[in-house]
Image (tube, rainbow, N blue to C red; front, side, top):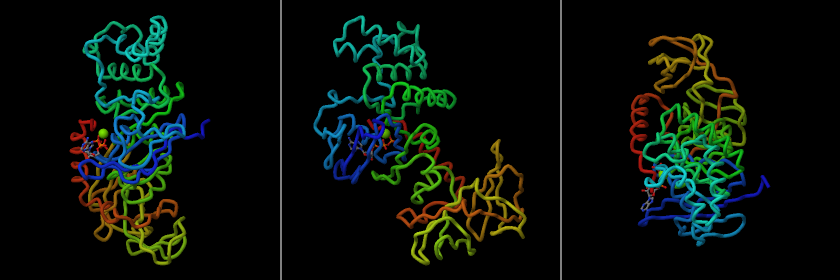
Length: 377
Ligand SMILES: Nc1ncnc2c1ncn2[C@@H]1O[C@H](COP(=O)(O)OP(=O)(O)OP(=O)(O)O)[C@@H](O)[C@H]1O
Ligand SMILES: [Mg+2]
């Protein structure tokens, strides 16, 4: 059972007003899997959920549910429920009636509804709040009502569109753990949307990284982090130093004017490549012991570690270390072969990786966060 695809998207294209929003989109999701769509605002995450939920028909390609094409099957006939970013609870109904809503439509006997609602409220830790009005609940409690309502009639697939975005960090972390536990307990396939890479990495069996309506990479959190396929993925997931390089031969690469052993192979001799080195994988050593040398241009203390920018021949590297260094220090960098990841050149080459505009990048990211409010509905 575990290996069967429950949802498949095959060659999907969607355009709005001539603008392509999803382009040759192919994705297979296994039964009981926790899959996360991750990508920047506007990349097509909500659109993908709407296709699966049946709120939108693709212009081309097929939506498959358990091997059956369902392009024109109306949403209410699909075994799929959605939790929207704004929970869309019924404000005039109390907690009990919100959760009972879908069961009433199904015309279940009152006794069965009561048992089901009680079970669901216990599952989301809201027992005792049955009679409360929705507008007297905290954001976190409303979130739980939305979850209870969405799983009450046991959908096969639950679509969650940035369900935790409105919660503060602490509550968000708690809910991440609870949702994950619930998914395992209930045995429901979760298709989760977020633009928060840490959330995607901690919760998912597999992550789908998207940009501009196209899948950039699909893989386990470890795959995506350790073996990014292109500069977009490397930059979007975690912090990365991405430099131009040349693959001299198998297991041997040149960048920043030096030659390094690495673990990658299968490139043409002298093929131009993008080289990724994660900030936590670089050791700072004495200048005469370094494979590269440079000058520290900035130091920030972040609690567990320091984030240090080192200028190597005009390219700014970011390094994370628990050792203290000071602006103006001349240092050496030591990079082990397994810290070096080689990627094919792509349309994203040269766009990321230099931290000279580091603070601007941070500003830009936090701006983007505020622009996120509209879940695309
Ligand atoms: N009904 C629509 N009509 C016209 N354009 C649309 C429609 N729905 C979505 N779009 C456009 O399609 C693109 C993808 O939208 P979508 O809502 O899927 O993005 P998203 O990845 O969910 O972004 P966010 O993280 O901001 O929610 C956007 O450019 C959006 O403006
Ligand atoms: Mg969206």
